[in-house]
Structure formats: structure tokens, C-alpha cells
Length: 301
Image (cartoon, rainbow, N blue to C red; front, side, top):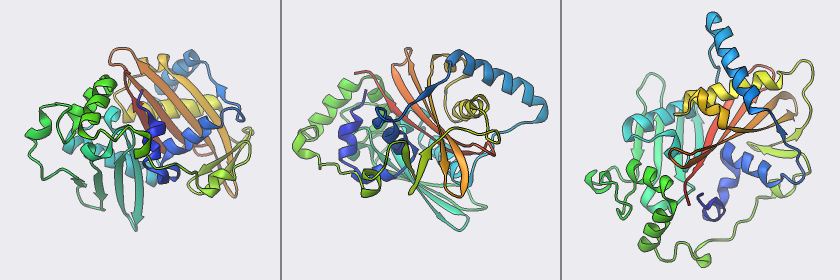
């Protein structure tokens, strides 16, 4: 799997950006935070039942403005550059809002940043998404060959790198021999707000939230899990059948003066393509609104 610990040393500010960051911190504190696993078989049954029962009621997932903007930005990258949910899992994201417009920036976190470049998507009301890539001016033939020795990595290289991490690391080391040396990584220091977290606490977009137990007015584990699974299927190439192979980690958090949250880490390793996926989903525990969906992906190694 991609060495995310080393990758994150190159981008220390990513500690505060994106749901993958928050779920990584949750997993890092696994020795003090009790995780609750739900039977995968039960989860799969719940999803199937939910879809069958609610289809008649024209049930649809409801996303927050942020989650919807992130989904539309990813769809724009897929349409313009052919990126898939697997390869987009190699990029962290940052969303900025200005009125009704959104700007999404996608920065590599899993491999050397230079050949991957950054992607930018601008979403403006009444307009088609505007996309940009660091290497838009490069002749597409440079990367469409799929060679890992190309100085620019597009979708073909990203997918190949996920399927053969060792070959990808070798190619990157040839490009930049110092890349994987300890000296080339800046030391990573957690921001003060993370350093001060107490047992059972998590940082959620600048707000400290506290692990708790759901009450009678909160959405059940089963219903929240069904929503999280449906959101993953809608945003990925995964199917309902893939859910049977998932490991589900879930926690309930309270927010001061706001509705509580269900947070999920749904992990897959698909033997067919050798790509591991760790999906993070956050669901409003009162309304069922999907607040954020994100994935980290890794490959054979």
C-alpha cells in the first residue's frame, strides 16, 4: 500500500484538510477510541432492504452544499481527464466557497507531487464546471502512453501505479533519487488543535467533537450505515455486491450547538485489481444528510 505516512510528511498542512485527514486521526487514536464494527452481512442486507423499500417513495440521498460541490467537482474531473474514484483517492482536496460558487483543489497525497500535478475545478451557478490541470499545456501523448517513466502522470499512470506500487516507486525514484530519502521529507508536526485533543475527541473542520452514544431521537446505526453505503456506491465504481467484502468502522459524535454525526470508515481490498480503498463518510445523525464522502486508495506492494 502507498506509504501515506511519508507522503503526509510532505504536506503537513493536510492534517486540517478533508475527511480522510479526520478519519486518519481517528484511526491513529485507535488505542484510546473504541471502534464499533457492524456485521458486514447485516450491512449488506440493510442496504438491499433500504433500496427495495424506499424505491417506491422515490428516496434519494441528500447531500450538504459542501458534499454536493465535492461530488460535482469529481464528476467534472472524471469527464475531462478520465479520472476514476480509485485514482482520485490519491489526491487530497480543499474546498473554498464564495457566495454560491465553489473552488475545489485536488493535491496529490499518495505519490510524488511533481508528475501528478494539481487539479482545480470551479463551480459557478448556471455555468458548466471549469477544470484545470497543472499539465494542461503538455502534449497528451506524453502521458497517454501510460509509461511510468513519463514526466507527467495522467489517469493511465495513476491506475498502473495503484496496481503495481513497487514499479511506481521505482519510476519515481529514477525521476528524483532523493524523493524517498528521509532527508527529503520535512518533519511533520500536528497543529496545536490536534495536539490538545483528549480521549474520544476528534477535529471536524476546526471544531472539536466528542464521541458519544446515540439517543432515541438520533438515526440508528443501521439506517446511517445504509445511507453511507449508498453514498459510496453512488460516488464510486463499487457495487452493492462489493459491500460484502467491506470492513465497517463507525463512531457517533456530538457537536456543540449542532446536530450529531455518524462517521464511517469503510475499507475494501478488491482482489481483482489489487487496489485497496478506505472510504470516509459523514452523515448527519438527525437529518440523514450526507455531509462528506472521501476515499484514500492504495495498491499492491
